Length: 84
Image 1 (tube, helix red, strand yellow):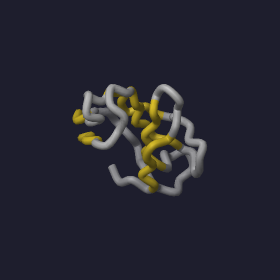
Image 2: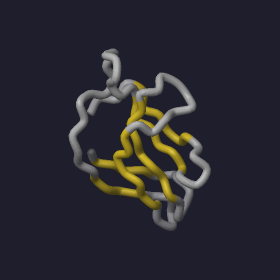
Image 3: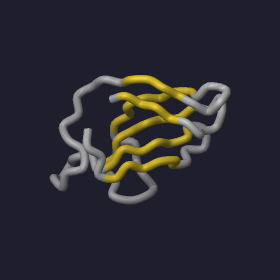
Image 4: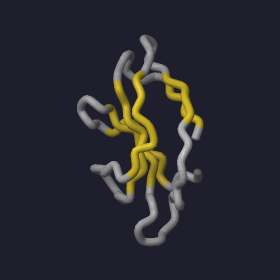
């Protein structure tokens, strides 16, 4: 998974994760990546791993991809029904 984020808080830590939660608050069921932004609030990187499915309706499948600010665990972004 290629990750490019802009417009985030400078020098802050974030976690990109998959969740089985259908609505907020989202629980981190599978962490994809934890990263820190640069002085301009940007991050670019890649992660690899095996994921069964995202966005399907089968019980136990991941529902969404979301981004949390690590310090206060505030959800910044939710990609509902993401296709990976």
